[in-house]
Amino acid sequence: MVWEIDGFEVEILLQAEEGIRIARWDETVKQVYVQATLPQQEAIWSIRRLCEGDRGTTEESLYDTLELFDRSWPVKIERQKIRPYIDKNIVHCYVLKGPLTARQRVSLQEELLRSTMLRFVGVWEERLNVLISEIGFRKLKTKPFSVCLRKSGITFDKNLHRLKLEVLEYSVFNALSTYVNLEENVYLSLRDRWFLAYKNCDRILNYEYRFSDSNNSAFT
Image 1 (tube, helix red, strand yellow):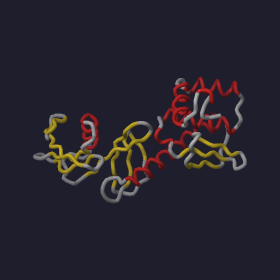
Image 2 (cartoon, rainbow, N blue to C red):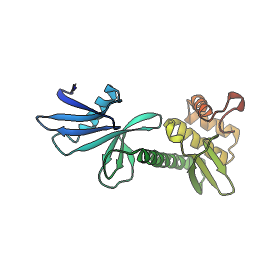
Image 3 (cartoon, one colour):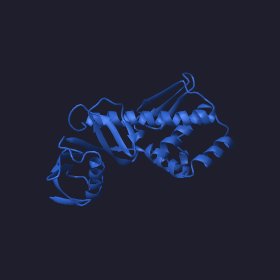
Image 4 (cartoon, helix red, strand yellow):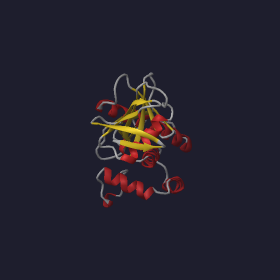
């Protein structure tokens, strides 16, 4: 199967494995392995991003995708040890050999969630003039977070990585507001200022944590 991408005729080799990788890309032959179940438009977009810095080399490069923050992200697999990070809408991570395994995907989701949540915590610590001594992550079934005043800490659900970034920051805002026992009028003022779509965030969280409208929200 041949696709035309940016004026190039690219031979597409379907594979069962997840992600995308370049088999060969030079002046005469352009071959790319593509996950068989990947939608064509998403695959073409990923190939373009992958080849931006890799055209003209026969060295095999690996590309993949990752479900994170309620969307599919292209993943550039690095062969040098780095901490995973997101730059220009691409996830960069280190894998010694081959594409991402199922276990590596879970680990990557958890690590990127942690770094993202800590960044949001830092923002709201400054806005609320508070310092949280301990931030943890574990599986929580009924709430996106748990506050422990005795230990001066907050625990977030480790599965929050499946939700949108706006919902994650909203969860952080609610966690820190609960931690400092923010007065209602101050809470509402900050909520209305920083989260214009807070009603949608509430709906998402209430659905994800199986709270009905009569229970008010996942934060009660």
